[in-house]
Length: 285
Image 1: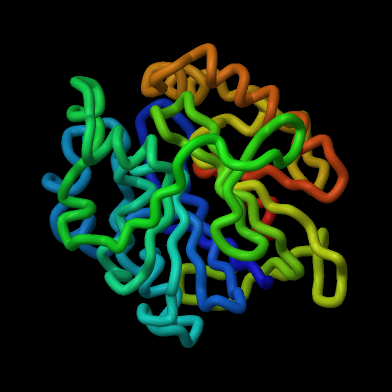
Image 2: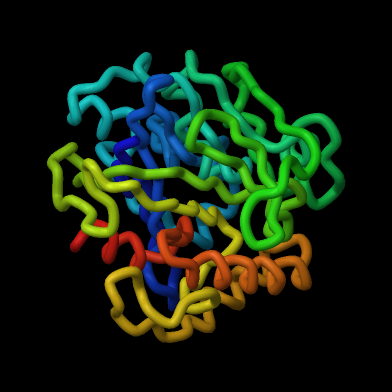
Protein backbone atom coordinates (compact mmCIF):
# COMPACT_ATOMS: atom_id res chain seq x y z
CA UNK A 1 0.00 0.00 0.00
CA UNK A 2 1.11 3.57 -0.59
CA UNK A 3 2.06 5.50 2.55
CA UNK A 4 2.09 9.26 3.08
CA UNK A 5 4.19 10.79 5.87
CA UNK A 6 2.38 13.68 7.58
CA UNK A 7 3.37 15.97 10.42
CA UNK A 8 0.08 16.56 12.22
CA UNK A 9 1.25 18.75 15.07
CA UNK A 10 4.38 20.47 16.33
CA UNK A 11 5.50 21.33 19.85
CA UNK A 12 8.24 23.76 20.88
CA UNK A 13 9.11 22.91 24.51
CA UNK A 14 11.75 25.15 26.12
CA UNK A 15 15.34 23.85 25.97
CA UNK A 16 14.39 20.88 23.77
CA UNK A 17 14.30 20.29 20.03
CA UNK A 18 11.00 20.78 18.28
CA UNK A 19 8.74 17.76 18.54
CA UNK A 20 6.65 16.60 15.58
CA UNK A 21 3.62 14.29 15.44
CA UNK A 22 4.60 11.82 12.72
CA UNK A 23 1.45 10.29 11.25
CA UNK A 24 1.14 7.69 8.50
CA UNK A 25 -1.66 7.87 5.94
CA UNK A 26 -2.04 4.52 4.19
CA UNK A 27 -3.95 3.99 0.96
CA UNK A 28 -5.18 0.42 1.45
CA UNK A 29 -7.69 -1.85 -0.25
CA UNK A 30 -9.84 -1.39 2.88
CA UNK A 31 -9.96 2.41 2.49
CA UNK A 32 -7.70 5.04 3.97
CA UNK A 33 -5.96 4.09 7.21
CA UNK A 34 -4.29 6.52 9.62
CA UNK A 35 -1.61 5.42 12.03
CA UNK A 36 -2.10 7.92 14.90
CA UNK A 37 -3.70 11.28 14.16
CA UNK A 38 -1.64 13.95 15.90
CA UNK A 39 -3.57 17.07 16.91
CA UNK A 40 -7.06 17.65 15.53
CA UNK A 41 -9.22 20.68 14.87
CA UNK A 42 -10.95 20.40 18.24
CA UNK A 43 -7.58 20.52 20.03
CA UNK A 44 -6.89 23.94 18.57
CA UNK A 45 -10.42 25.10 19.40
CA UNK A 46 -10.42 23.79 22.99
CA UNK A 47 -6.78 23.40 24.11
CA UNK A 48 -7.43 23.57 27.86
CA UNK A 49 -9.98 20.75 27.87
CA UNK A 50 -8.32 18.52 25.29
CA UNK A 51 -4.62 18.98 26.05
CA UNK A 52 -4.73 19.83 29.75
CA UNK A 53 -1.87 21.36 31.74
CA UNK A 54 0.73 19.46 29.71
CA UNK A 55 0.23 22.03 26.97
CA UNK A 56 2.10 24.58 29.11
CA UNK A 57 5.16 22.33 29.12
CA UNK A 58 5.03 21.16 25.51
CA UNK A 59 4.05 24.53 23.95
CA UNK A 60 1.99 23.40 20.92
CA UNK A 61 2.54 25.46 17.79
CA UNK A 62 -0.75 26.94 16.53
CA UNK A 63 -1.22 25.39 13.08
CA UNK A 64 -4.73 24.02 12.35
CA UNK A 65 -3.88 23.37 8.66
CA UNK A 66 -1.50 20.67 9.90
CA UNK A 67 -4.43 18.63 11.23
CA UNK A 68 -4.83 15.31 9.44
CA UNK A 69 -8.34 16.09 8.23
CA UNK A 70 -7.28 19.30 6.46
CA UNK A 71 -4.17 17.69 5.00
CA UNK A 72 -6.35 14.87 3.63
CA UNK A 73 -8.75 17.37 2.11
CA UNK A 74 -5.83 19.10 0.41
CA UNK A 75 -4.87 15.72 -1.06
CA UNK A 76 -8.37 15.34 -2.49
CA UNK A 77 -9.75 12.96 0.15
CA UNK A 78 -12.75 13.36 2.44
CA UNK A 79 -12.85 12.61 6.15
CA UNK A 80 -15.33 9.82 5.38
CA UNK A 81 -12.67 8.10 3.24
CA UNK A 82 -10.78 7.18 6.44
CA UNK A 83 -12.13 3.75 7.31
CA UNK A 84 -9.65 2.82 10.06
CA UNK A 85 -7.38 4.54 12.55
CA UNK A 86 -4.70 2.43 14.24
CA UNK A 87 -3.26 4.15 17.30
CA UNK A 88 -0.04 3.50 19.16
CA UNK A 89 -1.66 4.68 22.41
CA UNK A 90 -4.24 7.14 23.70
CA UNK A 91 -2.20 10.18 24.79
CA UNK A 92 -3.76 13.38 23.46
CA UNK A 93 -1.00 14.16 20.97
CA UNK A 94 -1.63 10.83 19.24
CA UNK A 95 -5.44 10.79 19.13
CA UNK A 96 -6.43 14.46 18.96
CA UNK A 97 -7.75 13.98 15.45
CA UNK A 98 -10.07 11.06 16.24
CA UNK A 99 -13.09 13.34 16.48
CA UNK A 100 -12.37 14.66 12.96
CA UNK A 101 -13.03 11.13 11.62
CA UNK A 102 -16.14 9.98 13.54
CA UNK A 103 -16.98 7.19 11.07
CA UNK A 104 -13.60 5.45 11.37
CA UNK A 105 -13.02 2.25 13.33
CA UNK A 106 -10.32 2.90 15.93
CA UNK A 107 -7.92 0.05 16.67
CA UNK A 108 -5.97 -0.11 19.94
CA UNK A 109 -4.80 -2.69 22.42
CA UNK A 110 -7.28 -3.81 25.05
CA UNK A 111 -4.69 -2.92 27.70
CA UNK A 112 -4.44 0.67 26.49
CA UNK A 113 -8.23 1.03 26.31
CA UNK A 114 -8.46 -0.24 29.88
CA UNK A 115 -5.72 2.12 31.10
CA UNK A 116 -7.35 5.17 29.55
CA UNK A 117 -11.07 4.44 29.72
CA UNK A 118 -12.39 1.47 31.67
CA UNK A 119 -9.80 0.82 34.40
CA UNK A 120 -7.51 3.81 34.84
CA UNK A 121 -5.38 3.96 37.97
CA UNK A 122 -4.31 7.14 39.75
CA UNK A 123 -1.53 7.96 37.28
CA UNK A 124 -3.69 7.16 34.26
CA UNK A 125 -6.47 9.47 35.42
CA UNK A 126 -3.95 12.32 35.45
CA UNK A 127 -2.55 11.35 32.07
CA UNK A 128 -5.40 10.85 29.62
CA UNK A 129 -7.93 13.41 28.36
CA UNK A 130 -11.48 11.90 28.16
CA UNK A 131 -12.61 14.78 25.94
CA UNK A 132 -10.63 13.10 23.14
CA UNK A 133 -13.13 10.22 22.92
CA UNK A 134 -16.33 11.96 24.04
CA UNK A 135 -17.68 11.69 20.49
CA UNK A 136 -17.95 7.91 20.94
CA UNK A 137 -15.43 6.25 18.62
CA UNK A 138 -16.11 2.79 17.21
CA UNK A 139 -13.39 0.94 19.12
CA UNK A 140 -11.85 -2.33 17.94
CA UNK A 141 -9.84 -3.80 20.81
CA UNK A 142 -7.00 -6.27 20.38
CA UNK A 143 -6.39 -8.33 23.51
CA UNK A 144 -3.26 -10.15 24.60
CA UNK A 145 0.11 -10.40 22.93
CA UNK A 146 -1.09 -11.73 19.57
CA UNK A 147 0.78 -14.06 17.23
CA UNK A 148 4.51 -14.55 16.75
CA UNK A 149 5.90 -11.70 14.62
CA UNK A 150 9.51 -10.47 14.25
CA UNK A 151 12.57 -10.73 16.52
CA UNK A 152 10.68 -12.41 19.35
CA UNK A 153 7.90 -9.81 19.28
CA UNK A 154 4.22 -10.59 18.79
CA UNK A 155 1.42 -8.77 17.02
CA UNK A 156 -2.18 -8.56 15.84
CA UNK A 157 -2.71 -8.15 12.09
CA UNK A 158 -5.60 -5.69 12.22
CA UNK A 159 -5.80 -5.29 8.43
CA UNK A 160 -3.84 -6.90 5.60
CA UNK A 161 -0.31 -5.47 5.86
CA UNK A 162 -0.95 -3.57 9.12
CA UNK A 163 0.03 -5.09 12.47
CA UNK A 164 -0.27 -3.80 16.04
CA UNK A 165 2.82 -4.88 18.00
CA UNK A 166 2.30 -4.62 21.79
CA UNK A 167 5.19 -2.65 23.27
CA UNK A 168 4.16 -1.43 26.74
CA UNK A 169 6.44 0.83 28.72
CA UNK A 170 5.57 4.38 27.76
CA UNK A 171 2.00 3.55 28.75
CA UNK A 172 0.40 0.35 30.03
CA UNK A 173 -0.98 -0.65 26.64
CA UNK A 174 1.38 1.10 24.24
CA UNK A 175 2.05 -0.57 20.88
CA UNK A 176 4.07 -0.02 17.74
CA UNK A 177 2.29 -0.28 14.38
CA UNK A 178 3.95 -2.03 11.43
CA UNK A 179 2.87 -1.16 7.89
CA UNK A 180 3.94 -3.00 4.74
CA UNK A 181 4.58 -0.21 2.26
CA UNK A 182 5.00 -0.45 -1.51
CA UNK A 183 5.43 3.28 -1.94
CA UNK A 184 6.20 6.18 0.37
CA UNK A 185 5.13 9.78 -0.12
CA UNK A 186 5.57 12.84 2.05
CA UNK A 187 3.19 15.77 2.00
CA UNK A 188 3.27 19.31 3.29
CA UNK A 189 0.68 20.94 5.52
CA UNK A 190 -1.26 22.02 2.43
CA UNK A 191 -1.25 18.55 0.90
CA UNK A 192 1.48 19.09 -1.70
CA UNK A 193 3.74 16.11 -2.41
CA UNK A 194 7.21 16.94 -1.09
CA UNK A 195 9.12 13.79 -2.03
CA UNK A 196 8.79 10.15 -2.94
CA UNK A 197 10.50 7.60 -0.70
CA UNK A 198 13.42 5.78 -2.29
CA UNK A 199 13.54 2.73 0.00
CA UNK A 200 10.32 1.29 -1.42
CA UNK A 201 8.57 2.19 -4.64
CA UNK A 202 5.83 1.11 -6.95
CA UNK A 203 6.45 -2.38 -8.28
CA UNK A 204 8.94 -3.27 -5.52
CA UNK A 205 8.31 -5.90 -2.89
CA UNK A 206 8.03 -3.03 -0.42
CA UNK A 207 9.44 -2.36 2.99
CA UNK A 208 8.13 -2.63 6.49
CA UNK A 209 7.63 0.71 8.22
CA UNK A 210 7.42 0.35 12.00
CA UNK A 211 5.75 3.37 13.58
CA UNK A 212 7.23 3.13 17.06
CA UNK A 213 4.92 5.72 18.61
CA UNK A 214 6.50 6.71 21.92
CA UNK A 215 8.47 3.48 22.38
CA UNK A 216 11.44 5.75 21.60
CA UNK A 217 11.58 9.54 21.69
CA UNK A 218 15.21 9.98 20.61
CA UNK A 219 15.94 7.98 17.45
CA UNK A 220 19.55 7.59 18.61
CA UNK A 221 18.15 5.22 21.24
CA UNK A 222 17.85 2.52 18.55
CA UNK A 223 19.83 3.75 15.52
CA UNK A 224 23.22 5.26 14.75
CA UNK A 225 22.02 6.97 11.58
CA UNK A 226 18.83 8.18 9.95
CA UNK A 227 17.33 5.98 7.19
CA UNK A 228 19.36 7.90 4.60
CA UNK A 229 22.60 7.47 6.58
CA UNK A 230 22.97 10.77 8.40
CA UNK A 231 24.62 10.35 11.83
CA UNK A 232 22.34 10.63 14.85
CA UNK A 233 23.55 12.24 18.06
CA UNK A 234 22.01 11.56 21.46
CA UNK A 235 19.41 14.09 22.62
CA UNK A 236 19.68 13.71 26.38
CA UNK A 237 16.85 16.10 27.25
CA UNK A 238 14.51 14.12 25.05
CA UNK A 239 15.58 10.86 26.71
CA UNK A 240 15.11 12.41 30.14
CA UNK A 241 11.61 13.50 29.20
CA UNK A 242 10.87 10.01 27.88
CA UNK A 243 11.82 8.42 31.19
CA UNK A 244 9.91 11.06 33.18
CA UNK A 245 6.60 10.43 31.41
CA UNK A 246 6.96 6.66 30.93
CA UNK A 247 5.25 4.07 33.11
CA UNK A 248 7.99 1.39 33.12
CA UNK A 249 11.62 2.44 32.66
CA UNK A 250 12.94 -1.12 32.39
CA UNK A 251 10.39 -1.86 29.65
CA UNK A 252 11.40 1.33 27.83
CA UNK A 253 15.01 0.13 27.74
CA UNK A 254 13.91 -3.28 26.45
CA UNK A 255 11.83 -1.59 23.76
CA UNK A 256 14.88 0.34 22.57
CA UNK A 257 16.74 -2.96 22.10
CA UNK A 258 13.81 -4.45 20.19
CA UNK A 259 13.56 -1.40 17.96
CA UNK A 260 17.30 -1.56 17.24
CA UNK A 261 17.01 -5.21 16.20
CA UNK A 262 14.14 -4.30 13.89
CA UNK A 263 15.83 -1.23 12.43
CA UNK A 264 19.03 -3.20 11.78
CA UNK A 265 17.07 -5.70 9.67
CA UNK A 266 17.11 -5.19 5.90
CA UNK A 267 13.74 -3.98 4.65
CA UNK A 268 12.58 -2.60 8.01
CA UNK A 269 12.58 1.11 8.95
CA UNK A 270 11.64 2.29 12.44
CA UNK A 271 9.93 5.68 12.75
CA UNK A 272 9.45 7.30 16.17
CA UNK A 273 6.48 9.61 16.55
CA UNK A 274 8.30 12.71 17.72
CA UNK A 275 11.90 12.88 16.42
CA UNK A 276 11.90 15.57 13.74
CA UNK A 277 15.19 14.31 12.31
CA UNK A 278 13.55 11.07 11.18
CA UNK A 279 10.48 12.81 9.80
CA UNK A 280 12.67 15.26 7.87
CA UNK A 281 14.80 12.40 6.59
CA UNK A 282 11.80 10.42 5.38
CA UNK A 283 10.31 13.49 3.68
CA UNK A 284 13.52 14.91 2.25
CA UNK A 285 13.14 18.22 4.09
